[in-house]
Image (cartoon, rainbow, N blue to C red):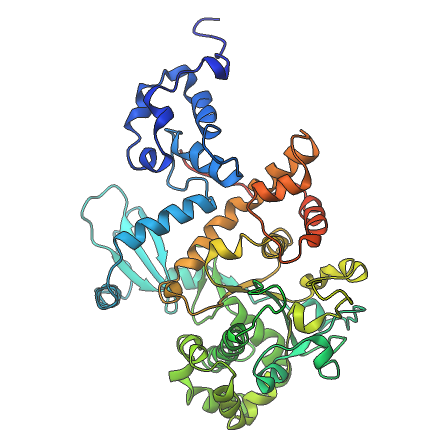
Length: 493
């Protein structure tokens, strides 16, 4: 066959100067890759990917990306890549006043009421709740900005009802032996998480229609107590309350029984809408509990708290470890308090019967079989920094279960981090989750099919840590049971 040649074995491929270059340097300047022979560039990238001083899957993925000339706009997302990007951002960090000015500049852009008559073809991007349109194949063209809350008439006509799903617990009463639900009102009254044994009469063993159930995924901050300072309790309680207030706002302005709308052409919600968590609270708590007069009362209460809840309660949580302020707020809002009573969470330390062994931090054997409790409610991720969260075995499993099973998932701020305002941690989490199932599945294949490592080696190469090492076999089996990922990472190049 003309032009056909057998690729060289890896050992005979000469990487030249590329061999000694760090992946960070190649990502910045890929010029040296052009000197590699055309017919061996793919093999050279594979050889380079495994020539580093670390054999973790994330490091191999970063080196493979760096050595690959055909890079599209969305490269393979790895933890090592996120750490590198975060390091670069720190070096060019914009001061808070300048960042605030840049945010205001976008809000002050000129906006049209509708598209011009002769628009031609255009491209679009969505930034937050703003739709940015530009003409295709025109340089220096004006950007047309439209809020998704007040969309173009064309988008409104194409929009279809797309309510948040009703939880499984709205149709069936579920009682899982050994697992319990913690009322949010109980957490607020106590001010912090306690062991199941310390409030066993307060947690509830079953679910009821008209109530909301959230599965909380979080890091353990010490081997014996997941939240020793009470910060996670404060962030969770305030943000849940703020999302409830937001659900009341949505219902008041959109209508209690009006569904949210989704544009078929854009794939985004349009019109008045909130976060997935706020919409789920509206569907699963507000609609079964309120009529129009009660909604008006709830809105009067929520509107008076806007200064506390406009940032989803993050600033209030930072200053209210112990939740004394939130207790006072709810005491003055009886209608919102009744709604809070209908919100329940599952937080492992507080909601599961412990074994006698003091260092056992998770499930007993019987409780392990009941793990699908995550599928009963809305998964709520308490996110500090993404790399820290996804370095934990349980957190990775819980995130992948939600992703694989199409469980509704909300990212809440889990600590007083600098990235809270600009949403960087959330951005990294979403992009990493696009490729994380593929990386984990490759690790499982190496263990189960190619037999090149043990289960412990697999977890180590994935960079996963465990508060209790005895959890490792169970978590590995659960990751193995997730099977091959169905999502596809599509990159135009």
